[in-house]
Each structure stands twice: as structure tokens, then as C-alpha cells.
Image 1 (cartoon, rainbow, N blue to C red):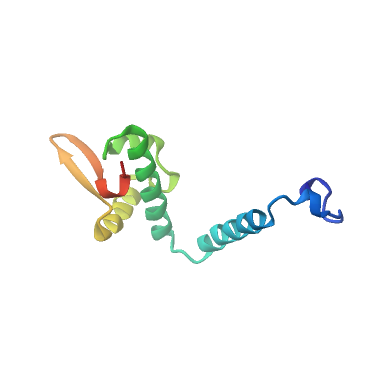
Image 2 (image 1 turned 90 degrees about the vertical axis):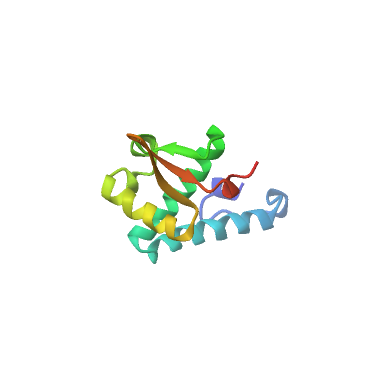
Length: 117
């Protein structure tokens, strides 16, 4: 493939099986990298937490995730209590997740509509 030939290598038509896929991949990566540049830190943390919560809820089959699990395994920008509280406040405003206390235990509940079935 082209990445094996280096920047000066020539790629012939037989080596490019799906140019649309290659272009789409590069556009996706560029969008991903550039979006981080102009996203405020708190919003970026909330987005990462939202994505992680949905993936975790789908993985476990439960829309409730213990906060201690988030501190241990969640995205690094929200492993601090203050940062997680800020991120959860942003998510609660948009209704994808909210903090719930059940006695002494604390959970984040993900909107079940986001988990799918």
C-alpha cells in the first residue's frame, strides 16, 4: 500500500482498492484532530464523558454507572470530583445523563434512549 512506499513512492491503481474509504478515513481523522483545537476544555471533557458513559452502558447493559467506576475507568479529564461534577452539569443540561444518589451510593444514569437496544 501507499504508506509502505513512503512520501516519495508512487501508488498504482491496483494498490488502491477503495479510494473513497481512504479519503473518508483521512477526513474523519482531520475532523477529529481539529475539533479538539477549538473546543473549550470543559466541553471536551463532557463530550468524552458522554461517549464513555454510553459505551459503558451498552457494554454492561445497565443505564446506571457507579461514580467510583468513572473515577477508576472513565476518561482522564473527569477522574477528579470537581471536573466530573462540571462535566455532569453540562450533560444534565442537555439531558443525556444525570447524577443520582441512592443512599450512600452515587450513580450516573444515562438516558436509556441513547443506549439503544
